[in-house]
Image (cartoon, rainbow, N blue to C red; front, side):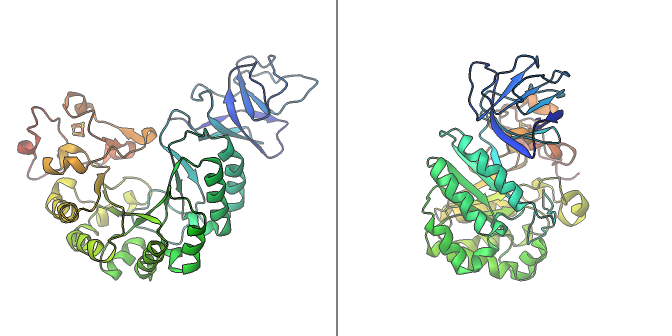
Length: 389
Ligand code: SF4
């Protein structure tokens, strides 16, 4: 999936954010017009982008990026940013359910398996400014937006401003915020979030163990467990919707059943608990010895954890895990959770009866996956799971 194009910019001081159109008669100052011939330049648009290597000579200098490598990936209505370096970044894709707002690359944790390792740079004001312009351009029927990082709450007051803007512009959109929840240990943060009064907001908060030292080790941050638990209770006090996210790996599996019991007894207000397969990207390849356990080797622990919560009427799901690697009795909990732009299948999947039901793999997990992956034929996969590597 392509999210970026590059050409040469003229007339762009910093950046422009607009909606893509290929219709020369569709002119307004929120549109960025794509043309294959630079000479055809509508006058009412915000900017023009083209693969043509000739820049447009016009009395009305419209900001433009010319000589782009390819613009075929852009659809009518996509929201993009074109900057003064000639880079065109896709901010929102109209034909996808998997659109994410990147709040910051900074984080106050440093998880062993972080898929997007934090970068210590002051990117918050610039990213906020970009999305402040992009959000009003997103179609009002957008079903879901994810706010990710880094750690979004490090935006401080801008985090709440961003949510207020989304609440006004996209009142019917589900907002899924991926946060470590630690900032909400400070009650005023939870109180401030509650003031926005948007019940479509749900926080996805990771919890990796019922034992503080173990959680702190996994997230590589002292006191993180205590802060997260306090944050979860502060959020619950204000009725904010919570999802608990548990990544499955060698450091979290041994206490998985105990963690389930802990969640049930101490966090009963959780609306959703999800157990998530490991992504082989970011820090994971560097920590693979500490993290890797084949999914087929943790089926006992996963089954206990899922059934414990499910029997107690908690809403529990399994993400990022292939059907052929887990017992059939857990399939009802499996979701097709991997975003379209990073979702792949192995060649052998083509012969599988469950291809349409299975969530497949992350693109980067094609080179690190379970030894148990094998097509399901006549639903006999569990009999064919190998015992050892
Ligand atoms: S063979 Fe492929 S499609 Fe079938 S269950 Fe396994 S991973 Fe999914």
